[in-house]
Image (tube, rainbow, N blue to C red; front, side, top):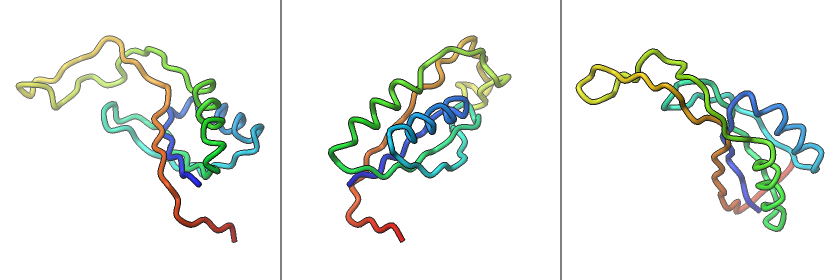
Length: 108
């Protein structure tokens, strides 16, 4: 069994949860915040049997797409020289998926 720790942008979450439910997968939703843009995202914990991991990854790929948006923050304060940098366009979306082996799983 695997635990997929999946980080997605807030605007992709509802569609992903619906697609997972249609595929008979369950997820636990946790609110989280990105470190770079400091904007809201969601972390999903998805428990899945080893042989079904690729099915879940396929659903995530179909549901969570990369896109560009304008920089939501005025400056990035950790830029060289401490002056900050304004970015014009930023690639957002998609997903980050960590696959962790689960030694034991019980549904109580």
